[in-house]
Length: 178
Image (cartoon, rainbow, N blue to C red; front, side, top):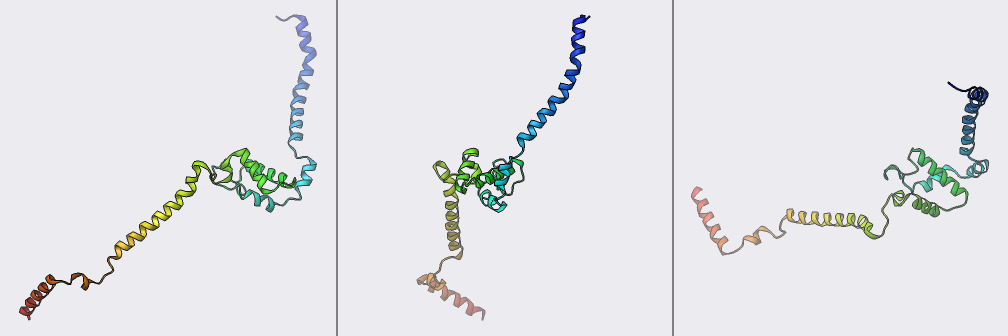
């Protein structure tokens, strides 16, 4: 059983709580919509930058979420679209491509460049393919030389006293069959 005071409190606050349940989510939704929209000043600045200018910078960067398989200018992920918007804003602010590249390098690490950095242990990623191609070329050249055989004439190889003896015996046997 509830006391008369509790019942009275529930009756008096019930309309207020129903209104609060409707108004509070609507207010939160309004705040989110206003906060996520681009300010008018940013919209006017971004209109002077073309998509080609953005893509020129984005071609040098790789999607950090795709594991380095797609360039930033061709990736369809929402995160990449947001990264292109950041590039557009930074270009509108007057930053050059190198500083934008450095910004993304700092934010996402070296995988955003699509190539290993040229320092430390990563030099092997640059040197080993060249060594492999050079080694393969040497291997093929040696194999072709071996398959081509010796370059001296056959007559010069077999000249000698034992060759004369063989040739004489061959001539005698051929004469018997004639």
